[in-house]
Structures are given as structure tokens and as C-alpha cells.
Length: 200
Image (cartoon, rainbow, N blue to C red; front, side, top):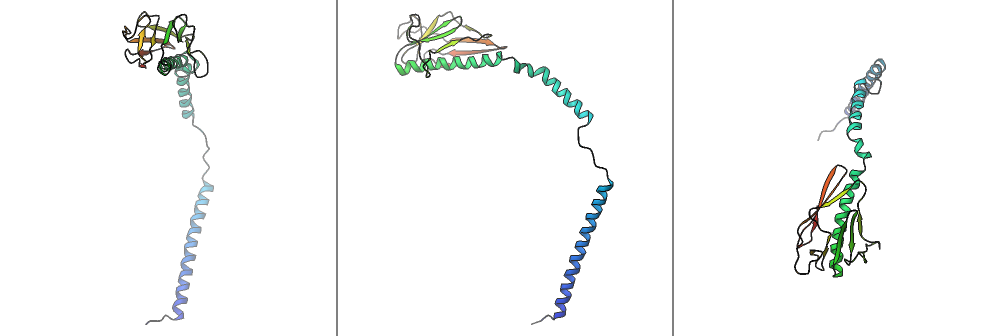
């Protein structure tokens, strides 16, 4: 077995110390060089160039001309929300007819639609969950039209639509399209015969 003399361990230690000093010195030189370089080179100013500022102004100008007027014209949003409200109210009327097992009448007028439990002047309106009469009032800027000349229709206890004046089980109800226009857009709500499915 070979044994190392104490001289070997001393030489080994001195070698490690020299290597450490050499590495430390090298790192110190690199740090000094970069700091000298940074102090000689002037710092670049932060900010935008003239070309970038002009490009941003052009983009903002295009947006102002095309997109912003839509945000100030609320007719588009009002018309869209009224279409959704009309569709959900028609579906609600059908669900009330099925749940209460009775006829629910949808009566159209020039200003909107009323939802009633009887046809005689809408004496008993359908009540919503907030205990208010279910009705649709056309907002300003929105017009409505039907694809056929009917004053209204009703959903029977099975949810099937009938024209007013029909006697069950005979129905003359045809596919009804309610066209709502406003805010530069036209949307339709369709009530299907037989099933009474209400969709856009």
C-alpha cells in the first residue's frame, strides 16, 4: 500500500490555492474591463423614436374613425338584447303552459307583445318569477314584423302552438318568423309548428 508523504499534501494544497487565486484574478480582470467599457460608452436614452410615435398616431386615428362610433351607437346593443329577451320570453310562455297545463296566449301589437292566460283583452297576464306581468315592449329604434298576418297564437298544455281561433287538436299554425330590425342589423326569431321550438 502506498502512503503519501506530508510533502505531497502540502504541494497539493499549494496547487489548489494557486488555482483559486488565478481564477479570482481572472474574474476580477473581466469585471474591471466591463466596468471600464460601460463608463466609456454613453448610456442610450430610453423612449420612442419619431417613426414609432407617428405609427401609433396613425393606428389610433384609424380606430377612432372605424371602431369608436360603434361604442357610442347603443341601438346595436339594444336591438341584440331585445332579440334575446323576446326569445327567452317566448320560451318562458311555452314552459308556463306546460307547467300549469293550460293555454298561454301570445298577443302581438304595434308596440310589442303580451303574454296572457286568456284571450279576452289579456285580463290575466302571465307573471314572471319577479311577480311582474310578462310582456315585450319594443325599444326605440327597433321595429318588428311577422311573416304572416296573425294577431297572435297560443301554446297549449303540451307546448304545441295554435293560431287563435283554432280548436284542439286541429292546428293551422304555420312556421312563424318574427323579424326584429334595429341598429343596422336584422335578426329573426322562429317558432316552429308542432313542437313550438323557439330559436333564432
